[in-house]
Image (tube, rainbow, N blue to C red; front, side):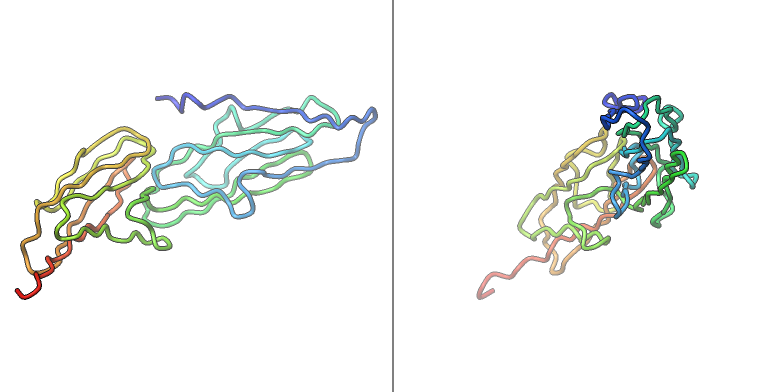
Length: 222
């Protein structure tokens, strides 16, 4: 689907300063991202930014893995003594490097320019199991439990696979969006914990998830 249905054209809201003669007031600043930067997931193709400026401007990237589409890359401000609030979309290549990537979004507005940091994460947006920092914790299943849920947000069509024959998925593929997939396991009749590797893939990026099923707890007196 070309971009997203909710992707609106460049929006400019004019905030008139109510001054009848030319003002020496000039400014440019990003509203989103803030000083921390804009974080995007490895399979994310689009995200938006917003900024204010009193000038005509151009918007550009200093790296090859994200770009500003032509329709959002410049704006001619026809107003005098006005702050223009603008929104623009950025387009990202998938991050298959396994490492975080850093870039700058450059806003050039007259004699005034400002940069915003853009950080592309090397992993997918998995919410269960949880992350401890940037490390994904194992999905732990009790020996007597037959199911657990895997939760994630995919920004493209996704697939699930595993190297184990003792667990199965409610679904092995689907469309982009917030998803919760039930994992069903066979009863663990061994005397030790067992692990399986689950691979979640979206837009060519693969996230490895470890599923651990605990060993049975012996009955009292056994």
